[in-house]
Amino acid sequence: STGFPPTIRELRDEIGVSSLRGVTVHLDALERKGFIERNSKARGLRVLRNGEMGRRAQYIRIPLVGTVAAGTPILAQENIEKYVRVKRDQLKGSEKSFLLRVQGDSMIDAGIRPGDLAIISESATADSGDVVVALFDDEVTLKKFHKVDNYVALLPANAKYQPIIGKDFEIQGKLVGLLDEAQLFDDENWVDGDLLPVRREQSKHFPWIFGREVKE
Image (cartoon, rainbow, N blue to C red; front, side, top):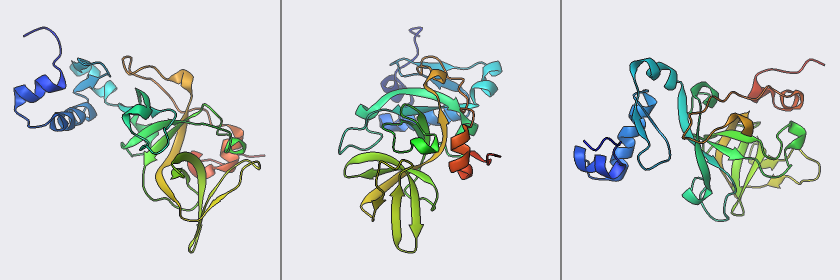
């Protein structure tokens, strides 16, 4: 009756759910189905009209992770720069995904450059050959996962760096694509981002990610 969208706390009181988390779960489901959209503001909830539902349902809201503080989970609130919207088909079927801002040049020879935004599908496991995000010595690293029998390693794509060999790392997710910063908008403006054109060096090094080889 106020003319403003409700906050999560107000929704909890109105619908009789016992926790704020319970309200968030319901809102997540409504957003996935394209009935509502949200942004990061306190009253950033909007019911969509029929004509908007199909179009908006093609997009999903995910966090953009910047610099990860040592010893914190990747998706800890202090590591999240903002929320953005990307097309569902860019997530390769996994809605539990996030964007990670690439730090450093350890994967430069694979065409993964500092500042690129890596689309990461959350996963604690990976197949040999996957490019993964892993926690090692309380720091986040993006590397190619290699496994033969009981031997496992994280391999860089830059001769300046050494492989990380052994089991003292934890896989957090797998790379499924890349976005460019210029294609993103704050969550207040829903994003119409597309995957970057496959660069020559990316296709050559990681055809299993990008789906096509480069013809010389």
